[in-house]
Length: 332
Image (cartoon, rainbow, N blue to C red; front, side):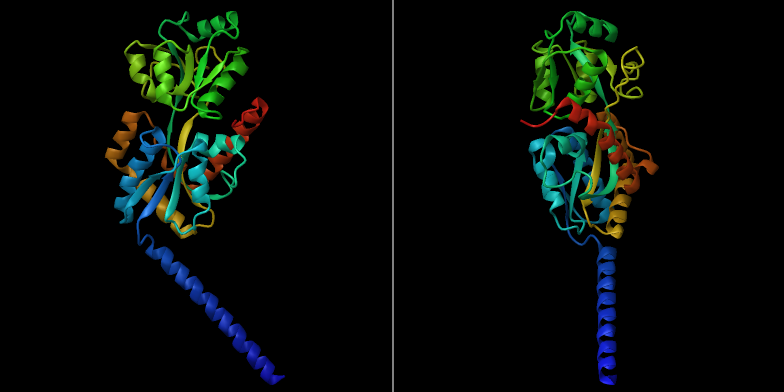
């Protein structure tokens, strides 16, 4: 009996020592992080708004972290191919994801994903937010929002609007607008903002709800008409343009936001380190100017915590998923 007790004591001592050593080793690794380059996966093509946001942030984060931060474009299926890669990655802080409304909200309804757009990631920080607005061809027979709604009701099914992909923020904005104004017209799907804007300028479509910075130069040049911002407040880059609700239209608020995530299971120490690097990046005057020039707002410090991103992300899913289900939005 005594021998058995001694063996048990030795066994438990071994286990305690083993797990203590593992914990110490893990803590040391977290403290040393990062020791090699970090990859940020962007689920959209180079040159688009999400790629641009990722590259601005990555460049500045590399200075704070003391390691290269590389942006890799893994485009396709509304950002979900890149999202799946990150979700399957080792949660060691060396593979991250910059996503946005379409990839991290809309995609969860559109596609039968192998991962959950929120539950399979660790939030790091909210990055930027920009706005959508409704713009129309310059010769559209309406000069303001009330006129646009009246014209659409007088011509049911005849006017056409554009959308940047099924389940995108642009499509959801359009569906919200149609539903709340009791109008109906065909939606033409485009693979990107550039061809949609080109067709709008050429008069092939009548109007579109689109990320505002893509069309601001055309509005300023008088090549397109603007009817209102799809947000709770005016866009700082065009302060003279009222919100849709301000000018008697429905309350439509579709913020186009970007965030940074790590795979589920990344340690708290690593998330804290990454979050601090984001905050340092966003405090840089050059970064602030670059985003201001693009029409992107940088969130306040309290909005950039991992907890704040988790709360905001969930609120977006709770708001938009029922609307998208009711509208029957899904990928073909």
